[in-house]
Length: 137
Image 1 (cartoon, helix red, strand yellow):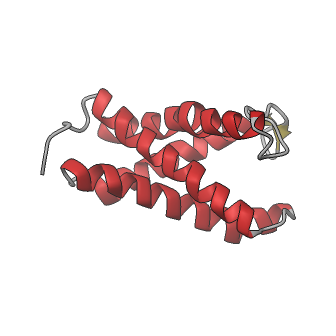
Image 2 (tube, rainbow, N blue to C red; image 1 turned 180 degrees about the horizontal axis):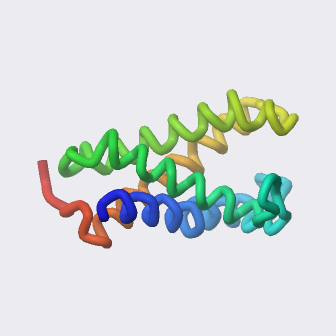
């Protein structure tokens, strides 16, 4: 059951935290494309945002595996830092080149900020679902 909670936490954090902050960036003119992209993506033709949320769920499980035993501030900071670094490195070094997207200092910075905020969301949802107590170290 804990792995399902970790998956749901990552999925929800993607839809609410990641895409929410992306919407703020879009409205501020900082990114060229709109959030909640509904363009179908191969191989299943699901909307891009749902594909992103699915992978966010998988990453949520990775965060739980790495950080689930931590407590207090270390748990929260660990999720922000690991959330920022892990998905961003994979996106910039694997996903962007596969899709022919340009990797720049701006995409690295944006990825670290968006994914760090996503990691905070994962931690919050894990606590809200009772998978993790909001206790002090």
